[in-house]
Length: 115
Length: 111
Image (cartoon, rainbow over all chains, first blue to last red; front, side, top):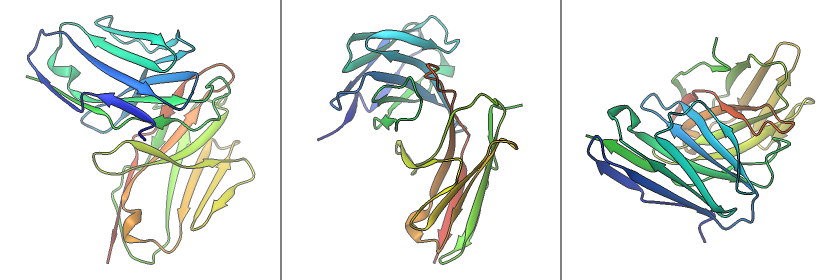
């Protein structure tokens, strides 16, 4: 039973295309996150949602649009993909998030390569 | 200055060695502190939370010094399976939802 799942695992696409990454958690958590891990392995938060509401948007270009249809899902849509978007994108969830003390559970990551 | 700084390593140690990792954070309002572990091409996983009084989990000991804004992780009796990247993580808490990851310290444990 996968707690946090992402699809697809690998995504290879051309510059200028639009793509989506899906994330689902079956832990009953209220908060979900998207992180980007670049080639230097630096993991940086992009967005966090609490009960379907956007809480954090970390100066991410507006080509990136998260959508949370319900609190178990947080999808990431990327328009007009650029070379610099190539990275590993991790989805994560935590029980609440407000106190910041809970463990975050990460999905396996989506490896995006923009050619 | 980066919000969370770690020595990137790599640390190359023999099995059985004791190794220590350090981490500093810049925001004095930081509330919660963690060490995560990330294996190659895998997702990060929580290793342990870090409490003000210091805490231990088996071979792993974490310390926090709020005055110096410094966190440490000590691994005793290193095993081959400890080879991974160790991420220092800081959360601003109090409704912040904002988690800052350090760039990680790479550890290689050799037979």
